[in-house]
Each structure stands twice: as structure tokens, then as C-alpha cells.
Length: 198
Image 1: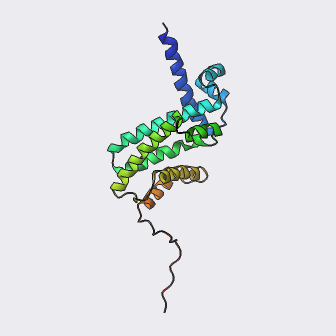
Image 2: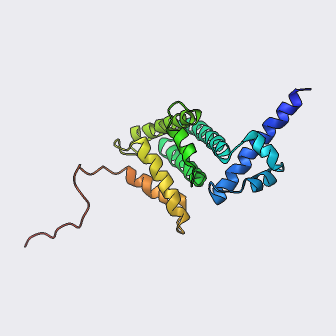
Image 3: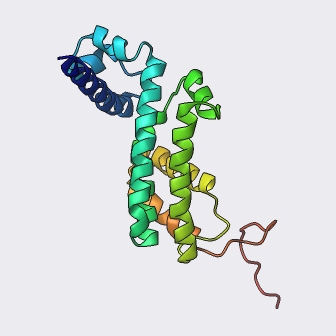
């Protein structure tokens, strides 16, 4: 008989994480915990038994999100390199609203190399780096582009899309097409071409 309570607890845990992902994506990190519990069909006490603080819920949510992104990146390694990278970055961008307004304690865990949250983030980034490397080998992305730059670009595209009428897919397509261009020599800047001398 002890199996059932454990199964029920796991189901509630997973349901709360799923519902929290939706709520935080809609409202940011300050989403109402009571509303999350209500949406999940459980009492606020059940939520607090699983996640004693907002930070604990956010950390669990991010850990789950990183795991999904890692799994997705690994599955896409068999696909065409440029399209695989485009698909994964779009997936990352669509979920980036979850990261708005993270408390300092959660950010500290992300930076702490000994934390589980840092480890899951690092695993996700490593999978993304493999996708990037394949796209670079195929000539779809310039060899100078780093994984950190790529992830920052995707999150930036999501931020820009939220504040304009431009779909995030369009912004990412423009960015990825631009990443394939030959990089400028160090120290040069774009500017108007001077007219030829008479």
C-alpha cells in the first residue's frame, strides 16, 4: 500500500511543475502560488509540502526545463544541422519568459558549480554546443560563434518579439542567416562606403 501515496505525491509534484511553467511564462517569476495550486487542483498546503518556497519551485521548474532542452538537443543531433539548430533555438526562445525576474538565490544556484541546478544547466549548454558545432561544420554558422553568444541571441530574440509584432521565429531566422556570414576582421566597423574619388 505505501506505493500509492508515493505515486500520488510524484504526480502532484510533476503537475505543479507543469502548471507553474505555464503560470511563470504568462506572469513572470512573481506569479501567484495560490493560483498555481488552484490550477493544479491541489491545496496551497500541498504545494508548500513539495516546494517550501517560491525559490524552490522556480529551481525545480528550471531544472525540469533544462532537462527537456537537453533531451531535445540530443534528439536533434540526427537532423539536418541548420534546421536542427533553428528548431532548438526557437524552443529555447519560446520558454525564455520563465526566466524573467529570477530571485537572486536561484541565480546564485545557477552560478554555483556545486549545485544540481548548475549541473543541469551545464548539461543543457553542452548539448546545445554540439548542435552549434554540427551547424558550424556544415557551414551554416560562422566558426567564431560561441555557445554563450548563441544562447544570449535566442533569449534576446524572445525579448524583442515580446515587445514588437515580429514573431520570434522571424527574428531567429534573420539572426541565424546573419551568423552564417563571414565575420568582419577584428577592429573594423560597419559604415557607409566612401564614394570613389573623381
